[in-house]
Image (cartoon, rainbow, N blue to C red):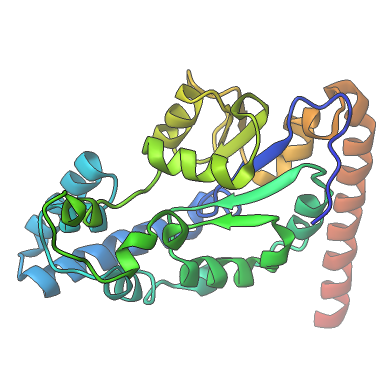
Length: 275
């Protein structure tokens, strides 16, 4: 995909998280995912419900994810088995289509990389629900991208290869950020990283990325920007387009007025039909 950065933009690339970033965090997908993980632990390990929940929290804290923790602890578990259970049963219908999102993403002049810990199947379903084509992005860094070693047969030898085979690479690890930067091919200092997780934002900042915390009104210590939703991207980070806040204020007001007019027209039309 051809791209040309504005002369006065500080960014050459934009890394965008998927879950709770491209769609709102209040959809219920997160709580449903936690329930599915608990049920997986109950079914796979025979744990009581309270122990499954506490183990999920513990593994997330110590290994970054339940899957990473289980594999590190030596459980013979293929990622596809795990993902098909915990993601395959998610209520994707709770993700509403966002008709403005494709145009917003396409308007970003820099190289755009979708950077998610999720597996490709989940990514495709979430994007489909949002109404966003994968081709909207210049590249994708997902679970399979970061962990190709987990999808090949392990070979026992004496040089530690088996141990390496058991390592799961996910945000916020350094290896995950490096994987995204390799795909991006850009200077970290000129790469903007958007994510809803403060842990991930902290990791990105430590490696020199410019960072934006999504879903928050207030910046964390390591976030250069904060935006309540991805829909506010043009208003809150106008530097992407090489503009200052005041330069985009008029355009924003026009878009906001047009939006209000469209919403009002929809309400009037709906009332006419119901009458």
